[in-house]
Length: 291
Image (cartoon, rainbow, N blue to C red; front, side, top):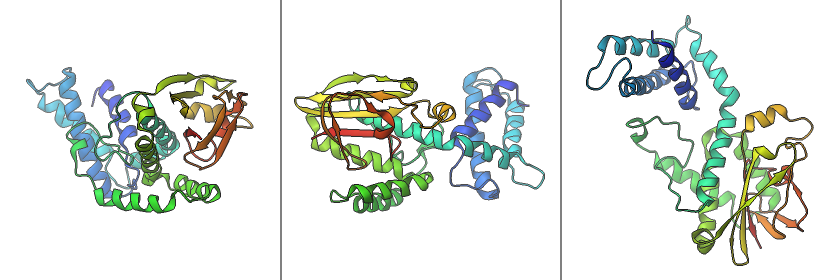
């Protein structure tokens, strides 16, 4: 117990929701996590209607499933599973965080009106309702936002920004990277409302061995342009990289001068291809604004 499909779903669920701030040896923390995962699995099994359902629940199977979840996540000297699974999570969690940054930037810059679900200003590893309706700690978010506003003020030099971005990356688990990105893009949308409300969407194509690993486009309104660069399949890209991460991949941007809104650096484009690695250096995703 449980049957293979449900066991596989269980491992997928653990990988997607494993808390970044809980040590696998923390009995109280793992117990709280097990309770959340148990509730999700019970709901998933009932809605799958293969072994149980809301209208005709199989109490025996559900009880066995619950015992399986809680015993595999139980912290004890005879149960190596929590630490072994946590080690596996550590291998892929950073790639998942970079994917989240990419999805966040796309959501905030593609045509349409972006929506940020409450609490997801930081990494949100919640499961479906009711798990995603837990109270949000807005005090933490307010403190982080205030600190970011001081650190990344308009008068911050590129050198100091690079240092600050490196510090965010080093402590990426706290989610400040994502909050910084949301703050940066929303400030831009506020300043350049017409660009994102009615601006044209212009796809951009990269060329080179890792071209398939880049999603790129521009938003254009009159003489104003914003360029978005987001990596994709980042774990595969890292695994195949040799001397440089992007393997010589380049992209041609519309001619002009752009300001990198993360690094506060100016990028001059003459129409000739630009190395993607240079544009994605210092932060996992890039947003450029024409000057």
